[in-house]
Amino acid sequence: MSEDKAQPNKRFLTRRKFIYGAMGLALTDAFFIEPNISHISQNNLKVPFLPPALEGLKIVHLSDLHYKPDKDEGLLSTVVEKINKINPDLIILTGDYVDHDTSGIDPMLKQLTKLKSKHGILACMGNHDGWNASGFYFKNEFEKHGIQFLINQNTTLSINNEKLHLAATDFIWMGAPDPIATLKGIPKEAPLITMVHEPDYFDTMLQIRDQHLQLSGHTHGGQCRVPFISYAPKKVKYGKKYIHGEYKKQNSSVFVTKGLGTTGIRVRFSCLPEIALHTLKS
Image 1 (cartoon, rainbow, N blue to C red):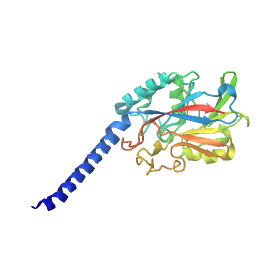
Image 2: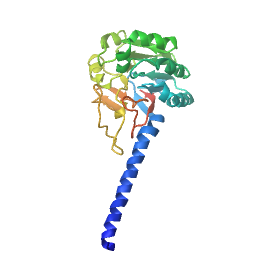
Image 3: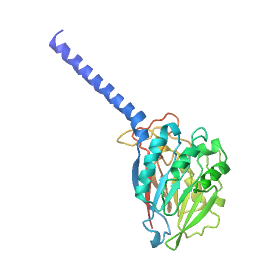
Image 4: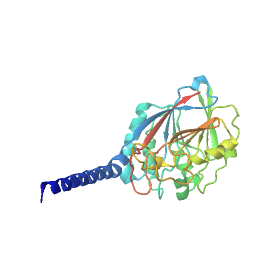
């Protein structure tokens, strides 16, 4: 074979090796690395009517654990350690604690009870939770472990002699959300954070109440995203409009976390499990 013919073949083989190598690295990352590590995102979020005494309040927001005891124990253990180093004022959990059954609830809650927060932990339902057991089951199990669980309800925290209102709907996808009951009794000009698992319900909540901050999960940020442009090819029902991060509409905003766990194949790519750390602003 002549030298002229050999050179193109050599370049072709080199390119092919590079492509195969890159694919191998991407698959290793997606299946064995990213699902097992987490990162902390830091977000300044506005809450209308927030009094100066609550300015700077730090809230850790977790969602979509989809906890599998045989696979996620190490991830959740390190997440708990990271959160306790933050020493947040409040921790909020926005649903999907299980995937296909409730076998992971007890070991998951044993881990979550190690969390430290100045003003407690609040939780709400996710669609996978509602597909596997009743809201009563989850409320009972979480509250036995000292975690307040809200379903179409609200509560008021007294912090620095000021009131912060928190409200949570039921899950949306085949659930029974009741936004009117959820917001009942909350003054119009009061700082309000709503907890709604599925982010696209934000538009419905705005019809009932403007001027609030909604915290959601559900989308996993796409779970696998296109690198560099952060595009999420796969979108889920009730999570097609608001995918990840903060979105503003009217006088309100919704923040969607990428969550911690996975559903379906245990894979993440360019979409690390997220501990969302929110600092409240007026």
